[in-house]
Amino acid sequence: MIDELKQDLLVQYLLHEVDTATAEQIRAELESNAELREFVRETEEAFASMAYAAPPMAPPVGLPLRILQMERNLSRGPSPAPRSKLIWLVLPWALAACLAIACVVLDLERTRLQKETGQVGQELLALQQKNVRIEEELAMLQKKNVLAEIRIATLRAQVAAYETASAVVVWDKNQKSGVLQLDRLPPPAPGKDYQLWVIDPNIAQPVSAGLLAVPNDGLIRTSFQPATPIESASAFAISVEKAGGAPKPEGQIILAGK
Image (cartoon, rainbow, N blue to C red; front, side, top):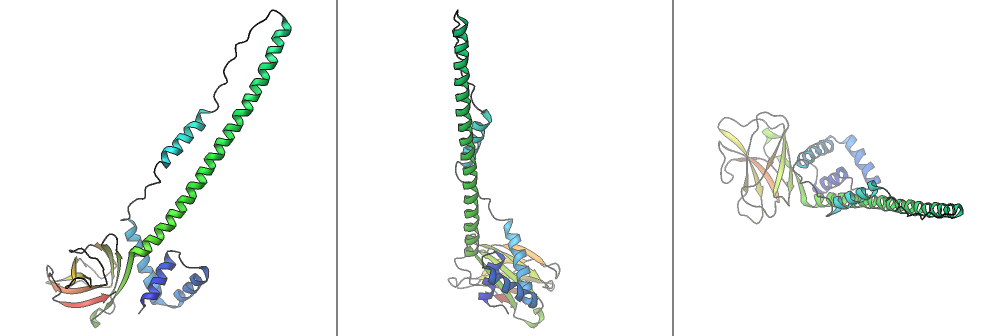
């Protein structure tokens, strides 16, 4: 049986929250311990199921508009230089002097615009780099938040007939819902149903989380939400009830854990 500290460490390993030395030690343990490998496999599959239910994360306010405005400014290119009115004089030397002055002015204007365009490009690059850093920080905060809000419970057989069955619950404290993964649990007998229960120490009776459809003994994954709001889910259990279920556990508890 895997204790809670080891389960938490394995979850941190899956979320890449452990240092290199600890990760190497865990990988070595996984190679020699089939039970640990099975727990890691089930947890990875449970995380994959919950990923579909995760809400999309919105970008920082105003970021898309600022990027689009910057792209428009760059696409316009340098503004055309105003055409100067050349005063034609009678004397040829005056025309040559005016042309020379115009060339110098245009060259200075072109140099100024090139510097401004380069500065805009540098600002855009700095903005992009800043956005990358913000996204990395948000991803790190999201990982920490997920780890803090998720509880993982492994349910163990309470009856010898179900020793080969396994069940893992991934409970989201924030959403007040979870995902249950079953493996090698045989279908219920005729006239019977499996029912999932959530134990809250603040509520006198276990709270029903619904009936479980188990058509075969293969890998089954399903989401659930308790019938009554849960403040603190301390444990989970599966019982065998009469067809249609019961308002409180009446049948035999076959799997339980916290």
